[in-house]
Image 1 (tube, one colour):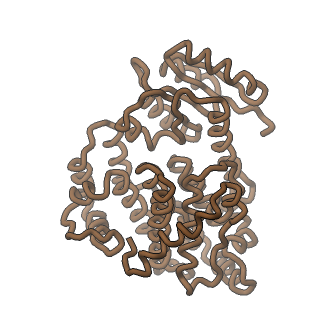
Image 2: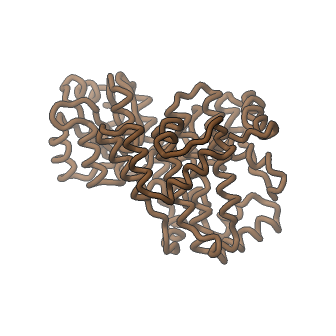
Image 3: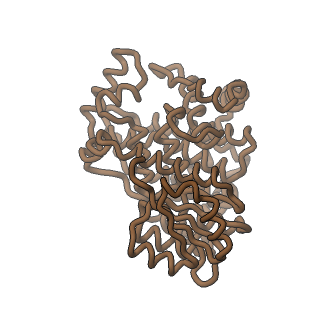
Length: 404
């Protein structure tokens, strides 16, 4: 990165800021750093100078971290947002989960903090290529975030949400309610009793899963099969649901917590959203890409780079980043075919989605060319021996007729 990145650190405790200054002194030639003792001071600095990232404490008097982050999102939506905090309740973390790109616990050493920031910038640099910008400029219509999704996020962040309240919000949209109940009562989730209303669905699935289902259903519903000559909406929806379910199972086998498992599920659901955008906006080129992949027996992602100059993963990641969704979601979209290109070298959401995508392709003999498992990447993580465990976890329920 030729130009120094500019980072603003915010904490109400002077000793914490002094500690950050000392700890990050070796980074002074790579980062231009500023320090603020409160939310208002941070906003004053942001108004005067441009910054690439903000790292803030959550528990501060007056304007707390959540209030500061709301203002940052409103005024500087492209800025990297990291929470660096001590004792923070799970309730508070759930409220801000959609506001931050990453959460780090105090005390945090310089290596972890540097890795978090560098990873975030790496993805954004990946999304700033000339080829991708040119491709995006050809796209006339990008899906929008559903107002229902935004209303639920605001309800959660206001600290007034409950299963009953979120169920009430969902029930206002009759069409979305019908789609959610149809999905929840399908064999995919496999509940033993019929779910009759949105409140029951929220209680059983949880706020995060319902919110993510609304996002996924909305995205797919914005496209008309009649206008998608080269892509089957039903097939892509089934694939996305399966990858989401597989990714969640894989995350659970690696002892992921509920938040990480839910994150893997929605990342799997959205990993191929770029295909919808390309097929809807550039149908002739998309058809040419499919023909090239079939003729030469190559993966579609390789054919996409040759036809479009970028992949559906790049386009999907651009969209998810544009919406301000958490980093793991658009990282998974961008690199699900090439996880080795990402700088993070630990098991994470990307790992789960990459493996899940490959396993779903393997399970479908109709796929022309199965997606390839990046064994070099998995070997680097020391996880090659886990592949049979993941395969059994994902494919055994299908063989037994229980997809969910």
